[in-house]
Length: 65
Image (tube, rainbow, N blue to C red; front, side):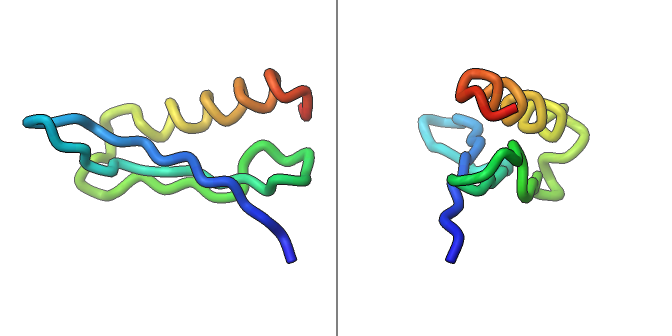
């Protein structure tokens, strides 16, 4: 059984958090990205590129890439 870590991206609007997308990665793996999703009504805002870049930078900090 694999354990996955999920990182959720939210927008703050009118003092409320709204999920815009997420990515997941296996906890015990050298892979820095397993799944990525940006909700359809938040696409074309650059969130996908941001999540990919964030996952890569996170793996560099963790030393797994």
